Image 1 (cartoon, one colour):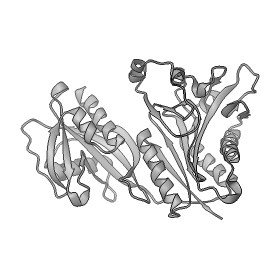
Image 2 (spheres, rainbow, N blue to C red):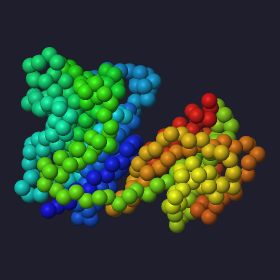
Image 3 (cartoon, rainbow, N blue to C red):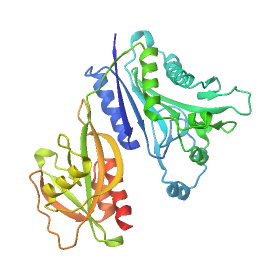
Length: 361
C-alpha cells in the first residue's frame, strides 16, 4: 500500500504555502516521498483561480487593506475564494496512480473526504452539480449554503491546491467577494451549523483519516519540524524607525535576515530569542512576544526542510553598537520598506510589520 504523510502546519502565509506546494510537488515527482497532505490555516487572503473574474471582488482596495486582506492569483481551477483563520485548508500533493487518473473522480474523492468529515459531526452535506464545492441544503433551496470550497490543479497527474473547509471562519469576510462567483447562495461554517466552536486539531485528525481511507493510503508520521525563533530588532520610532538586518556568510547562503536561530533542547521560545539576540548582536535585553507562530520551508531544497517559527521583537538605543556573531559578515540598519524588500520569506516580513506596530504602542 502507498503511504500518506500528513503535515499539520498551523498558520502558513499564503506565499510561503505556494512554495511548500512547489517543493513537496518536486519531491513527490522525484519519488523522494509518498503522497502528502498539508493541513494549515492562512491569514486573510483572496485567491483568484484561472477562471476568476475581478468583478467578483466587491470590496475596494481600501476596504481590503483595512481588513488586512491580501490578494493572490493562482493556477488552481475556479473563481475567487477566501482563506482566513479558522478555516482548514488542505493541499493534497498526490501522484495519482494509473487507476485513479481521472480529474472528475479526483475532485469527487476530495469532496467525499470533506463530506465524511462533516458527517461525523452530524452535519449532512453533499454536492450541487452546477456549483463547485461542498454544500448544505439542496440546489433549489433558498437556504443552500456552501461550507467547503474545492479548487485543484493537476499537472501530469500530480495534484496541488485542494480544499478549504470553514470550521470557525470569520464569515463576514466572505462579504468582500462573490464566493466562487455564486450570487444565488450563501456560505456557512461548522461553528455556525453546530452553534459552538470546534477544535481545529480534532477536525484535522478526522479529515486526515478519511483521506487515507478514500485514497487507499497508509498513514505514516512526519518528521518533526525544526523549531526556530526570529527577533526583529528596532531602533527609533515612526518614520525614523530602523530595522537591523544581518547578512549571512556566503557559505550559509549570503542572504539578509533579521535575528534568527534554533531552539536548543528543552529551551522555551522566549529564552531562545533572548539568547540568539545576544549571540548574534551582543545585545542583552528583554524580548517582546509577538504571538506570531508560522510554518514555512527553508530555501529551495528538495525534499523541503520544514520550519516552525515564533516571532519576537526588541528595541535598542541609537548608541548600541552591533557585535556580529560567527554566522554573519555584515549588518545594516534599514528603513521598514527596505527590510521588507530584502527578506526572503513572507513570514519574516510579517514579523517585521508586527514588531513595528507592537513597539509603537
